[in-house]
Image (tube, rainbow, N blue to C red; front, side, top):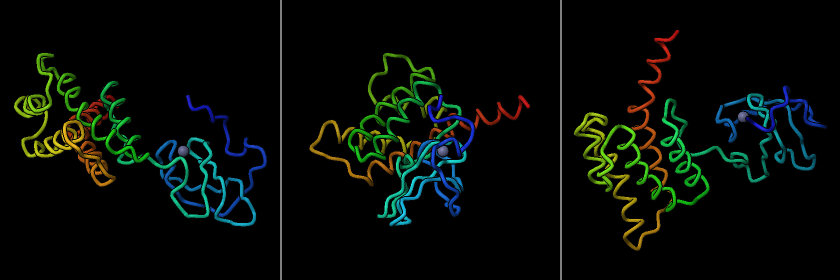
Length: 197
Ligand SMILES: [Zn+2]
């Protein structure tokens, strides 16, 4: 449960009506337009805005960044099994915080968990056979194998070589995972939702 939920944006003491500001909320990951917040007077760019969707406070500083907490890299994927979702969110959080080597290493772990979740035998405990199993058993399209191979290879380099991943490495890994996870889990989830209406 969101600890900030209280029922209305103006439950925060001293909030003012301000000009509308559009932003991507780092808490709920929705694009929102907020006209509630706290302005710090001397520099109008320093302010706290209350997200009208989740009612959480987002801080903006004069350097004009995207607000704190920062929106996580990539996108939320619907329909993920619990453990896959937990690991994927770790990858996104680490990449967003600049912990790039941590992000690509956990991304490699995620490949194995995906294979197990889809029914691969636990005797498959290495990443190359896990990717091959996912493709050979039709869970991932042949055309997407190179995406998973890239995630595996960057993760391998971070573990076995003198390699420190940078922001480009982790961002690409997150984007590739979004595409693969959507195809593997989200499409089926959306069809199931439509059928239940
Ligand atoms: Zn929000």
